[in-house]
Image (cartoon, rainbow, N blue to C red; front, side, top):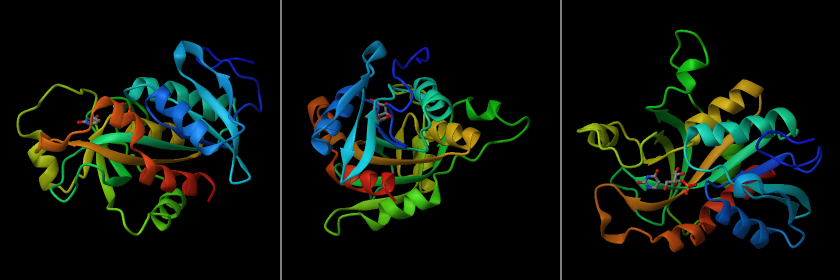
Length: 235
Ligand SMILES: O=P(O)(O)O[C@H]1O[C@H](CO)[C@@H](O)[C@H]1O
Ligand SMILES: O=c1cc[nH]c(=O)[nH]1
């Protein structure tokens, strides 16, 4: 069995999937966590791996960038491959002043400027929220010596477009950071009655670019977020 975007057989994916945007980060995470990681799909270069982590089955697969891409993979995994929970392991830009580069964020809720979730329920502004059980497991596993923030994030469609006053207003409303997939992932999980969570590494800060990570650092610096994501995957 294959879907249009995943060339895997039934049973090739574990019930829990860690999902970074970057397929190279997926490969790195898979080999870091699992000695027996096996490539189960690489359609369009979007690598997916399955193996055993701490004695339990686990998969890791990239989502690509943006809500349409993440929705395609989440939908196919939830609806065709028996996946029960997806934990996004991403990067984000910091917005709140207390958030610093290198910190981790658990995205309890995801505001969005995307139309994707607004199409889901007629005349309703969909609330994109994480699964509580997964969020609790992730927060409980947060390393004591790391800065971990828990709260609302925003999933924007544009990476580069600046809407005057928007980021400042988001900061005023306590939004922790910006990324590009969580709201859609939470929407897909709600559609299929599954669980989802987003755990992010802050790779830059929108109000202070003096310590932004390089592309290489964004691929490699995810260990606090990963510790929490694994705990959520196996909770
Ligand atoms: O590092 P990832 O997980 O891809 O996440 C962030 O990075 C990408 C933009 O550079 C977007 O996908 C955004 O959500
Ligand atoms: O979407 C993203 C991801 C990282 N940093 C940003 O500023 N935006």
